[in-house]
Length: 93
Image 1 (spheres, one colour):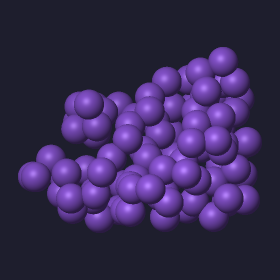
Image 2 (cartoon, one colour):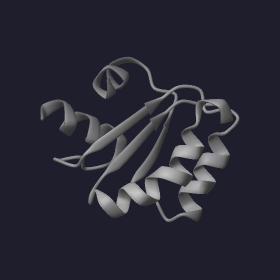
Image 3 (cartoon, helix red, strand yellow):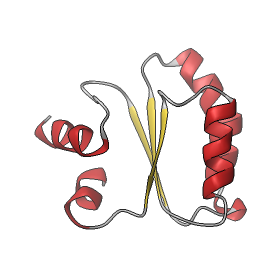
């Protein structure tokens, strides 16, 4: 619980007991983060109240993924963290 509080504070999101999905890696089409945001998260948000998806990474799909989050109204449920290092990375894992 302490790690969830520390992580939530670092990224500006209250995690509390919310279910969390974590994706990490280069944001490219092949890795599928944007596909997950567009095709999976809208349905998950309906079925799992309060679910949150944290996406760590950079890449050429970063802006497209960000646009998909905004277009689908998922800003409360999906958070792009960018490149993550150090203690925050450890907390995410």
